[in-house]
Length: 366
Length: 262
Image (cartoon, rainbow over all chains, first blue to last red; front, side, top):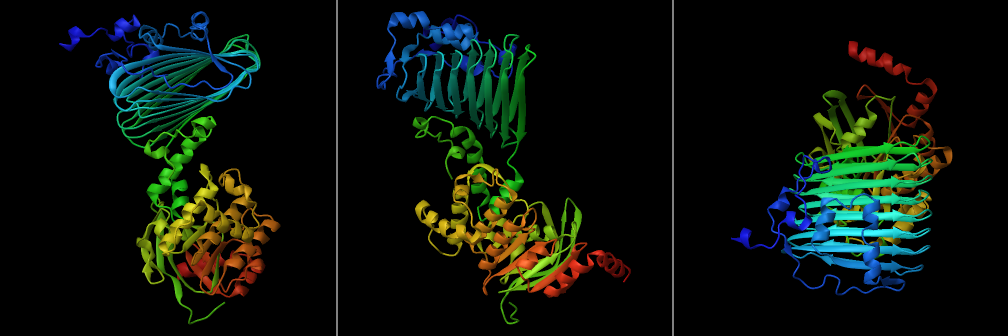
């Protein structure tokens, strides 16, 4: 009888049918698992109830939030993406923040719980010219749950955003996240995303350098085990010259986990002298795990440097033997090597995120 | 220092080993007593590096015959980490870089594994830092290298100093140093050799694997062995190394041809 009494379907909420694997954007990621879940609205307490804003960070008035919400989504071309439409339809908790120069670090924690409910958040950040912010954001789920996250950030000239998102879920939980950032010239973005433990996780960092001449540094780490699936689809677009991108995406695939990375970089004619580098590194810990990784470079400008690379490996026998030859047992040596592999990304999280290391066993310090 | 009544630490008997089904060692015999420094010399491909890796338990090598006894115990049945914990040390020719793993943490975990085996208490971070600072002096190493990832971005000389630092912390009973002199300039060589000399004692033994005499000018061996085609062809005192320096390795081919005919 559940089917007849429920208020919504995913299709109702998003105003569009679930994407299928026939769509290129969802080729490796099946949302069918969602179809089996009834999208029940959030009934818990205000997820931002305990939020305390640090000095230099103020709430945007509703009218102003209405005016700017959606701008970065539109400019990074994802307003009509299914997860974004779902977020809109789910009537998310909205939070609009203005960040001034010299702002203190901001922490945002969101727990989607285990009650099988849909928690939706729409965050909008406006960084004023010359402002800087360290944002540590944590998402978690401890059982069945769906977390819909849409974050927008506008970086004015010479603004700096150091943004760490640590998303640690549960095999019965799903995460759908869009992180849309627009950058004015001279601005600087360090975005570090870490996800582990979700049955399904899809993160889409999307960055537009509106006139080029900005600096974008992306770091990603995703860990899959059991039957989990983690997917990162990133996009960086340079709409002007002299932009910089430095991107590293790392994957650990264990058990029968599946990992997907698609890294789009768009360098239109206006983006001369772009300097972009993208590297995808995957570590396979099991024969049953699967990794799909793909760069997607669209380069029209002719005077650019765009490097990309992908590596897929197992734990190196020589590294293991070196540690063993110093008296370190094979399993502890493996943990050390894995922790080292992950540390490369984890050490780039903002300081305030440090008390939140993911607790998936291999992330833990040995 | 040779004392014929000193206890035997390592006894290698007719050791045979292969890698990828390719036989490399064809019956190596070697007896090492406490207080001794041995040098195994030979050309590239003679099997001397293979000998060091087989003794340390590298998984790529398969022992196909013979025995190795370490202080009365069958060494070959032990995992590499267990060999290290009971006092066998291999200084690598090419120390491995391990990005993301702090050198200090690595040294501490390794030192504690050895201490635990010896029935000593494990050292916490602070106690270990005190210990490591005293040992840094052995190889005149800058403490800044402790903060970096294991061997990552170290020069050749820095990597070899880091090897000897590990040796100073682990206090091995038998240390095998595989081509520790390779890639070192004369200053780095002096520091590394000085470290090895400081750590040598009547209770332990050192096996130097080397191609050249120059390391042996700084560390005087008690026994010199010449290896060729996976066997020890000739053994002698330090004068054998000087003889090799003078006449080279060409005689090895003639001797090998003779043994094959014989």
